[in-house]
Length: 316
Image 1 (cartoon, rainbow, N blue to C red):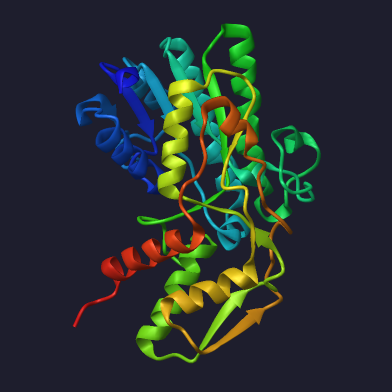
Image 2 (spheres, rainbow, N blue to C red):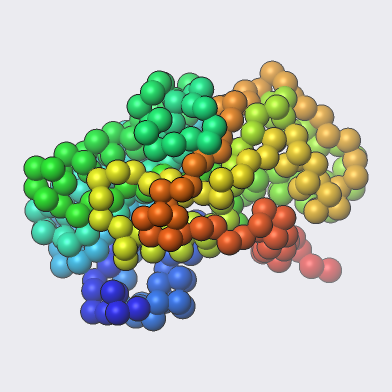
């Protein structure tokens, strides 16, 4: 708690899914005063504009950049240009503003989508440059990975304390449940819950179910980011995850069971599976700042489903 005392924190993306949990952790577990945290809102502060980045960085001791545009496979296919431009412009300009304002520490959060399509699992940080990302999310992944290059270059030339974290797919309360732009877990929770509520006997799911994914509960991700901010100061990127993967067809069956859906699951095999495998080597995070995920997938899914039902399902 002493690390944060008196520090001014700029939390870009602090009103979003992950950012809101970082705020809860800082205030609830670290004793940070809400007045210490500045959260630029997109409706008032467009971080794609240089003058806005320069303005919000003024007076900050720590900048944690969670801001950017993100979405599932369908969203990535539909808006690749927006995803590339928004993510690279926000990150690059905010990092340069931090340099000019002499910010003490800059934390850039990247994405597992930056890894090459055929990275052998578990993904090690050294594998980031061993190939091209999976095509459906390459613009997003490359934009984020470019910020790793910038972070390392700024550390080398200017001596900035910039760290780069690579979280795996996140899920949890306050996630995006819009079917056009959501990731796999919130999309499945919504589909199955609505099917149960409406009495539907069939749910259509994208892909073949053969791909595998690793999922990190958002509260664990927030803890990992905060601990890294407190303890880590090296140029090497660090994975944040559980180190455990699950096949999508197993995940679908699990969410169907947890939501009470007993109907038929129809696989739309013409839709893309995305990257064949995703599972991170999390040993560096454990070694460098003693981070290990605490939440079991089933427990995390149950909490997320309960939150979704409380927020979105009308009570009689």
